[in-house]
Length: 380
Length: 167
Image (cartoon, rainbow over all chains, first blue to last red; front, side, top):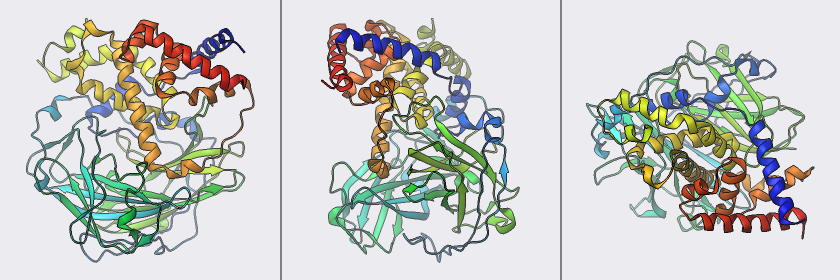
């Protein structure tokens, strides 16, 4: 094959790709999301075509158990043992339409003073141990910081700094890592929560280690610390042992306390599934704020199975589904610090195989898509 | 001219955001296309959203003398796609265990081969062949000379020839 052939094939493939590519989210919707000071997580795009959900049959299970948190900062376990199961109920619904986006107004953020670390207090924390490649163990910790200031402030585009501290205050792992992809300054209003966290890996074992997650949210020398005393954490000597897996700050999200969007969520799913079998997974939902989050009216959630990098299908979503929570088995609200484990089920498309991204999130009751939680799985 | 409005200061947030929208709108489809090509397709919307936010934040830095708005916006999109891929590598460990499904036709082979190019080579291929930019704008988007773009494309084609042709 000569270079001319390759060039011709590239030109043909480029033309074919341009002809087949479908328009994504509109610029106006993206500008509106920008004005809301929160990053998109891709729900808008697939929330728009409500008819797309009609062909998808999902079965969902919602089982709830309250994990008590004796005090704050809360110290939930890494393990997921405290889960009670109840019979599942299928409540498929059409993907809800989006309401009109608010007007874009970037000047609101520009006019606010920078946030100060001292104005934030740490709320409860959720921690999940994730199986990784080979012997690596990943730990994902999410926390919520409450803004106690009197006036709106601007969270810098540098995002929060994240570091792990041992019992003696020494920095564990690779030290402080800033999440520099906040991309636009976020406006934080009094009482709002900033949800963020850190992920890190270890490849040489675990041991019990009292640890604090310290987040520097803005100006000021002292960091906001979310004290953790987890059952198991990677050995300090292993933290950040590999350059490929440093401590990583998570993209922060600003949400109103007491709203569905303020709930911390994390998926637990097996790495591999048979494509002909229902895919069962669970979502741990924690209320990190100081306000009760009502679950009435009965909220709707969204599930998607999507093709990751390298997929060439014009429709990147193998499965898109929406379902209403099994509210008959659910409490009417989620108290501050409380957690629920939602057992979920979705039927994969039998024709889909390979690596997929499983995503779960609450259906937005406003124009702003709420944060989703994801996991990578393999269907075979 | 949109670029003139962008650098004219802030008389009103609403007016400025309207001018920004006018500035971006002609190139929005190209930004989405590049994001879909370079990023995890699942996250293409996130990438282009982030690119939009960066463009808004850096709007005062756009210099019409140094390149077209399209090249500037696509450069930002490419940078955000790169950061997004880095993030995904770090937070999605299970991806390392992904099953690689053998390609079943020539187009898939070509696509898989493109994914194996170096970052610069792939960006040049995506911008030139898939987004359809002329060499001059590819050069602006990649912050290099037109000659460098041509040599990068030549190297990319040579590598693709080996990867696809099995030579």
